[in-house]
Image 1 (tube, rainbow, N blue to C red):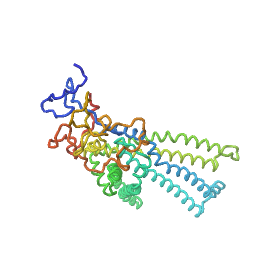
Image 2 (image 1 turned 180 degrees about the horizontal axis):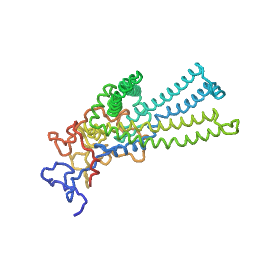
Image 3 (image 1 turned 135 degrees about the vertical axis):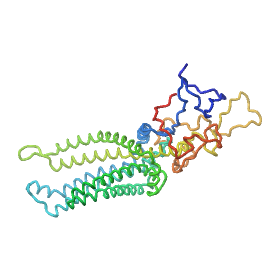
Image 4 (image 1 turned 90 degrees about the vertical axis):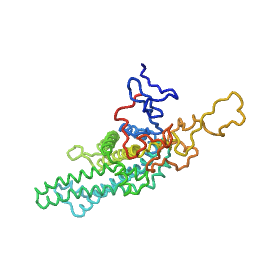
Length: 463
């Protein structure tokens, strides 16, 4: 018996109790029933996603839309590369007196004014780096999340259009970042403050008894942070307010804590390895410049000078900023894909996405035009003919070959600002082919609250 699966001929009834529609025919030699592959109009198949699907989708987004995505971060990167070295030169000039006095007198004690200048320079440097890091993260979160909205359907998008769609959410994303950070910090303070007060008061044994409370507070903060990883996708893709996004993300991510921890952590490890590779040339250049600008001491040995330290610091900061910018979109892309996966599992979003991609019509939408059989002679009188300009099935949904997604023009007939609507909850349920709307739907699509199985749990389907 051949192991090649074949579909049953049309009109042949299926086995007793088998569901109607494609895919019911049992496989040979007791194999499981044939399951047709899920459609994939974009970077993900329209079905519940496994960890491998999400990893491949992140790589596919960076490969197809990388130029559009990183163009949004170009301004912040150039500004940081110009401002940070300039601030390093300013810091060296401001602290030159303190450095010279400390080198001339090993037991020198800094004055109050010099200490104040040192604190101001160091604090300003930390605030500057924090501001650039926050700006990069906010822009990467808003643009990366909005980009997933187009990438799941394989739609082209330009850099100008992506920036226009992400711009209204920048301040909202920034406020949500700060609000989440303050909440986690408050939980940590509540847990650590009693033990710290007891330790400072001299009650050492009592402070040790309060350490489990501190560990509980730390665990609670970590649990809440992982449980709320979908907060930014909800905020942007559903156009929700920060407080409403917190509630919605908490409910949507119920029962998926370990997935929300493991998959972003794995993507982060890969991004960290790529960042180390990117930082290596800057580190090498920094050491070369440091030895080139170094001087000779009194005893004839080499010693670093102010110029060499500035060159090394500038190269290290430049490499760090480039690594941060390159790795910044990884977490937003992963969280947005996890959001799509959760809605596919709980709310049948794959059906709505298939309708948006034009793979099959929804309720009340016309079916695609059927091919007209070829006629050897002139058409009969009164025969219905398709209207002029009606596209055939071979043209419907055809991909444009040779055009990059970021450079392609919008689809004909589609509005310039149109984007797939992911804000509808839950996604509309479309009757399966061959069934009427009065018949019960598949269990995986008919109950939004039910979890649909992971397709990668038992390996790929046999065909």
